[in-house]
Image 1 (cartoon, rainbow, N blue to C red):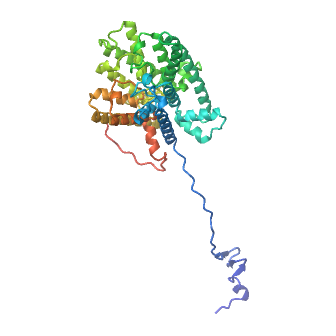
Image 2 (tube, rainbow, N blue to C red):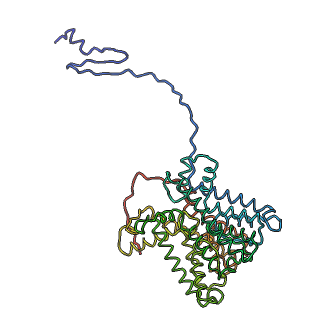
Image 3 (cartoon, helix red, strand yellow):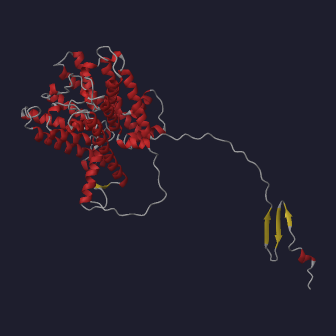
Length: 491
C-alpha cells in the first residue's frame, strides 16, 4: 500500500479566495473553480405608466371629418342659418353638413332658397374644409398661427395626401393653399362677370365666390334655386367651360398639376401623373361620346339642342359626372342608357389626394392594367414600362371590391325603404358613394331611413371604404413566417 506524501495530499486541497473555491488538479494549469452561490435579494422595480398607443392615421381622419360634420350640423340648425329665420331640423342640417364636408352636393332642401346668407356662407366654409381635408386644414391653421407641426402630424398628413415624403409634405400644403386660392379667385372673377347679366352686382359677386369654391372642390352645390343647377346656363359656354376647368383642376390633384407645370415631356413625367392625365382624357372623351349616343334623340336632354350646344353639354356632363355633380341637363329626364353611363363615371371618380370621390382614377387604371397583364400572360403588372408592386395591386382590388359591396348594401336599403324604380335608386347610391351629387330628383323625397343610409354613403365615399376598414382594424403587422403556396382554380 502506497502512502501519499504531504505534497501529493495538498494537490486536491481546496483553496478559498474571496468566496471562490478553487481545486488544483494534477496537471499544470488544471484548476477547477467553483463560485459560491450568492445570497438572494429582493429587488423592487419602479412601475411606469403604460404608454398610450398612437391612433392610426385613418382613425384620425374619420374622427376629424365626423367632428367637422357635427359642428356644421349644430351651426346650420340655428335660426340665423335659414332664410325664414326658423330653426332647421336635425336631419336636414345633418344631411346638408355631411354633403358639404364630403363635397358631394346631394341636398334635401334647396340651397339657394332655403338657406340665408349666413347658412350659405357656412356651407361654403364646410365645402372648403372638406375639399382641403381635415388634417390639411388643421395644419394650415397651425402654420398660420406660427405653431410647429410634429412628426406624428406629418405622418398623418402624408397618409392623407397619398404618401408624400415627410420632408416635403408641408411645402406641398403651402403650395396647395396658394394654388387653391389662385384658381378660385380666377374662377370667381370670370363667373361674376357672367352673372352680372342675370342678377345685381352684390348677388353676382356672391354667386361667383360660392360657385368657384363649389366647383374647384368638386362639391356641386348651387344657389340658382329650384334644384335646377346649371340648366339656365346650358347655352353659356363661358360658364360651363369655366366650371369644367375648375372641376378638372380640383379633381386631378395639385401633385399632378405641379408635375406637369415643371415643363417636362410626357415620357419624363411621374407614373402617377401619366396615369391620371391619360385616364382623365380617355374617360372624358368616352363619356362624352356615350352620352351623345344615348341622349342624341332624347328631346328632354341633348336631343333638343343645336349641334354645338349638344356637344358642349355632353362634354360638361362627362366632366362633372366623375366628381362634381353640377348638371346642365335634366338628369331625371335622361334615358336608362344615359343614367348608366353617368353611374359608371361616378363610380370611377377623380384622382387620389384630390377633392374628387369614387374609387379614383389610379385604382381604376391599375385594375385595367391588371386585366391587360393577365391577358398578355405577364407574371407582373406593368404600367407605362414600370412594374407595379403587388401591395399596390392588392390595395386597388380591395378598394374596388369594398366599393362594390357598399354600392350593393346602400342600393338594397334604398330599394327596401323607397318605392321608386331600381335604376334611379342605384343612381342615387352611386352619386352618394362617389361624392358626386347628381340626382334624378329622388333625394328630397326620401324617407329618414334612406337619408341616413345616404349620409353614411357620402361619409364612406369621401374617406374611402378602405380608410374606414383600416380605422376599425388593428394596425399593420408584418408576419415573421410565410405559409407554403397553394393552387386555386381560376376562371
